[in-house]
Length: 110
Image (cartoon, rainbow, N blue to C red; front, side):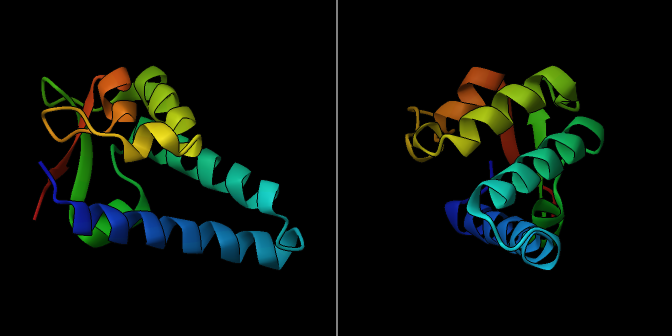
């Protein structure tokens, strides 16, 4: 499993990208930034199993059996991540509640 420091770096990179897109095209509206972040996260996790921030931090999101999350698990994880509270509350195994609900785990790939 990935450490908290790498997860925060990945999240910061993804949020910075969403903020830059929002600032450049949508007047830096907070809800637009959140929407861009959510769409970007869902699309990339559904197809690649990692966001740009995850790749930069050497992370990936996988199902518990090691496979890619797919659209449904990625959607559950993304919605709960955007609600914030599930992402900052961890289970006994160190996974956030958003990962527990989605049946996923953030792993270190390098």
